[in-house]
Length: 418
Image 1 (cartoon, rainbow, N blue to C red):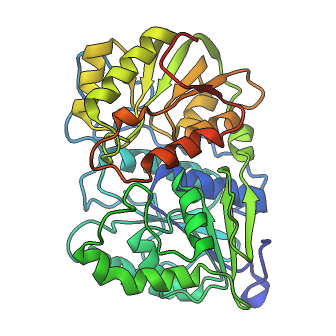
Image 2 (image 1 turned 90 degrees about the vertical axis):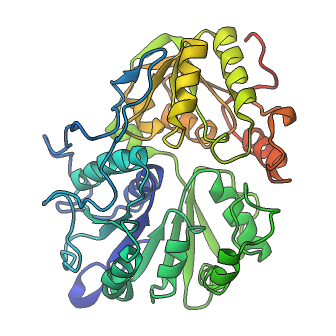
């Protein structure tokens, strides 16, 4: 989709809703692919000195690591309800400048690590010349009402809506307000694969690791909104839908345009990285989502690190601090809590010559971000014995599909010497 003319010859406004750093990264990739203008056009270089330096209250940046046996400090990130400092966002109700084709709305989560990465990604979006509007969408009981009320006007004026998580109840609710004729879904990791498949089959939108469970009272209460969102995300004569993804899309819904994300913006802005001789290991939040048993996971990480000589463990932003403490003390791995999505961290470097991962989004994205660098990405399958009794019946098949459809990766069917 190319930008269309709006009122008085100005570009039609595009509004993007993000709730995670990876979503915002992929909005920037989408905007780069489609040539959306910032303050000074698509070729505007990053502004020097615009990236905010870490402050004492922020999560540990990528250069700060948890030593063996240490745990992360408490109170990381901004507490819920604290607004972004003046000048770091577009104030609620402010008009979008006519020359800027994209405004990013951050529906801020409460998780400190996610907030820290989002703030840094927001800096990068501003450096590209786009407008960023930070909403404390979860800052208290009345926050959702203030957020939705404050966004209603810009939602109705927007000609294009970009979203990173179509499963989000927040996003689904906002979709009931917009009149936009163009809807775009950018990658939110492996969930994108499930979203496209569910849309193609006309199923209700349910995250893969929850599928198979009985709907709870909140699910039933929200069901009409979710159904409305699914209908709006279905192409029609007056509405176009695009999926921008680096993930394999095997079931394409009729009328949906699928655009490949090759991480061109990431490769243009970062690197090439310095490559070390050793191996790095990428963490996952499968324990936190209740899919994989914690003890089994820790043992698998220890075996992988010992077998392949890994020395660093890049933690997922949602990994529990206590779990990381156990990993550090039990394996001797250097725990790194990145300040940006791993695709940018790896591209910025240094990065190991081999990157080890369990089934996750990075087995699809890292080979694209690191194309031409010679870095080897290897993925270790999830043993069915590692799954918890509460894991979705579809978990094993879905995780195997994530691994099996990945390109340019080495598949490790067992934790054994390389």
